[in-house]
Length: 355
Image (cartoon, rainbow, N blue to C red; front, side, top):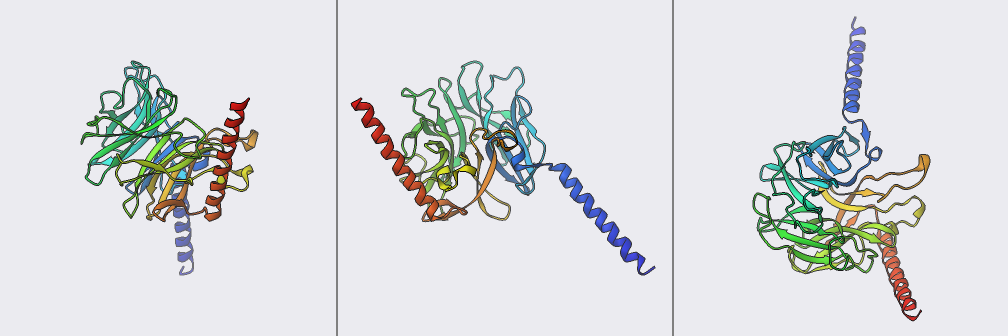
């Protein structure tokens, strides 16, 4: 009997452990690379990771998936469902959730039925899984132009701001801008005139008129950085801009090297472009970059890769951000690539003029 009891206890424990694993698998059945998402934004709350992003909703509106470990994810939860009376004609893009003053706020893009323009609106809920309700009067951004990808930033004085994309589709010269504006304390409206802070063609490495996905980060030395995306010669990428006075309404300059680019990879065959960045801190205190890659589906048949979320650990170094897995030669190769592409552009413009 003494020998049987330990065996029975072992069997019971093994069965219980197996049941726990099975329940966890059933609750979080999807791997990160198994579901399509663009613009993935992570909220960390009560020991779980909440991913919001374009394409996660199963109906018109915005969706979210939940994970305990950034690897295994739940089914999609519809956190906002746009009814027939809601002023949206599609383009439910880039939802980003923030916990602020005891509530959850979703900053998200949609196209208005009334105006015909895309804009950013603000939604509020008591739960990260919703249901969210719109608290702004339709788009918080201009109702006469396209303004997308809003993100929340709280400055050193406790003043909330929104940084967002003034889309190239509505600018007078077809070049996208990045803009900022002060928000009311309840985040429902702008209380300052928007200010344009830079253009899509500001960096030497830019080859596009597109501005995408701003996200702000304050370094330990007090410098204010903005991560954002555009398209370079190597495809979608992530750049870093820096405020000259550490404030969001300062003058912004672009860093020469990018945070993420396909140019970092010596073997381009298995490398993808990617972008629309945001930052979050893991449950064990690591600073992480979230973005989607590739920017459009790549490959054929079984080798076809769709847009999915990827996460990279970051470190602060020399008062800026770097991906831990990328080393000096990656950034050096990025600089060489940028210089080569700029020289090529100059020669192309020259020959275009003389011919």
